[in-house]
Each structure stands twice: as C-alpha cells, then as structure tokens.
Image (spheres, rainbow, N blue to C red):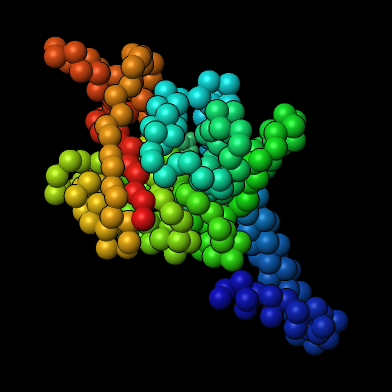
Length: 299
Ligand SMILES: C[S@@+](CC[C@H](N)C(=O)[O-])C[C@H]1O[C@@H](n2cnc3c(N)ncnc32)[C@H](O)[C@@H]1O
C-alpha cells in the first residue's frame, strides 16, 4: 500500500515537478519521495533475486540427489526389482500380457530391466517428474532400446483413450509414498487393465499405519528446513477387498525378504538391514521398519 502511494505521488510530482518547484518550493519532499521509491525498488529486487537463487539451489540439489538415486539402478537393478519381476512372470495370466504400463516409473530403470528379461513385451513408463522422464528418454535413444516408451503423466489424471488396451499395470515403490491407496488404485481401475501389480509396504491384518517423515537433511523448495514424505503401511485385507469390489477377485501377495546385507552408511534415508537372532533379515530406512510386499490382482 505504502509502495503504491509512493508510486502515485512520484508520478504526480514528476508531472508537476516544475510547477511545484516554482510555486510551493517542494523540492525536498519530491527528493525524499523519489529516494524512498528507489530504496524500496532496490530492496524488492534484491529480495526477489535471493529467493530465486535459493529456490534454484534447492531444486538443483534435490534433482541431483533424485537423479543419482535412479541412475544407480540402470547399472545394477535392486534385488527387489529382480524378485518382483520373477514373481510377476510366474503369475498365470502373464502369458498374453503384451503391453504393460509402469506408473511412477522414475527414470524407467525398472522398465529397462523388465524389457531385458522379457523382450517380447511392450512397456510404457509414466512419471509426473519431467526431468526424470527426460533422462529416461535419453537413455532409450543412447542404448537403441525398442519396445519401451516414456510419457510425463500424473497418476490422478490419466487419459483412458491414451492407455486403452494395456494388459497390466505395475507400480514399484509408489503406493506407500502417496497419501492413501484408494485414489491411486481407483485411477488404475479406471484404465481397466486385466491385472495390477505393485511393490509397497503392507501388513497382514486389518491394521494400517499412516506415517510422515520429516527429512531435515533435505530442505524443501517452499522454504521449510525439511522435506515431508509418506511411508504408509496398508492393510492387505483392506486392499484385497478393494480389488475384489472392483472386479479383481484373484489376489496374491508375497513378502519380499532381501537376500543380501545392506550396510547403514548414513543416518539419511536409505535402506539398511538388521539380522535378528532368528536369522531374519529386516529392512529399515532411518527410524522406520519397512515391511515390503509384492501384490498381484487379476480379473
Ligand atoms: C520412490 S520413486 C519410485 C520410482 C521407481 N518406480 C522405482 O522403483 O525406482 C516414486 C516415483 O513416483 C513418482 N510419482 C509420485 N506421484 C506420482 C503421480 N501422481 N503420478 C505419476 N508419478 C508419480 C515420483 O515422481 C517418483 O519418480
């Protein structure tokens, strides 16, 4: 408001400068207003530049970390990716499943692995992150891979026409990192695939845990000194019922037990294992236990 009044006054005084000088001798006032105007403009520009530089720095830090996380998987796919695809291929309706959509594909490293194992199938990877999809497309061109395509897309806003005729949907490490599973699964049901499979965190019973993690190692782009992530554990009974109610009566699940030890190198988020005295290898990230499962539901 003050700024606006100063601008109006300055404009008026500019027009009337000579008149004012002659008649009212208001030059000191004119100078004061003029100086205030430029001080405010400079402060404003300085502030905007700093906010811009700050956001830019945070974004590029976030992107670099995220890109590194996905790139590592091009060379050595996660044990969970390998185990997931082995298990999916053992499902009865996999023969004749020609086109598979991977939602939340990241840079598509999972899809590149699936395609290497099952070159006869066609894969489409979608992710809402434009940067990750750009890298996925570049990797596609650099390696002359066929039978894979990538699209930028939001799970909650998928075009039915575009994905008509897909046989199955996979999503790895996605559901538990969203606010809930009902809406994402509804978006998948809307595309009417013959089957849907996912890897996420589940519990064998009628209990669910909705957890948010504040990661103070990563400030977010909104000026908070932490990033916020979901790490939800969903009830397998409830998920099974949801599938049943939407015409997917065949429901299978299997826990994923990792077959190697993972060191805890950092207090940051990153999976590490602890072996119990009963020789069970449990997976953790930061302060959280990760009950990994694969699920598969078909019509
Ligand atoms: C934890 S990463 C998993 C990436 C990959 N599936 C993997 O297993 O390595 C989750 C991915 O889901 C994407 N994602 C999150 N919400 C999404 C949405 N609404 N629509 C599309 N992609 C989404 C993120 O951009 C991110 O790349």
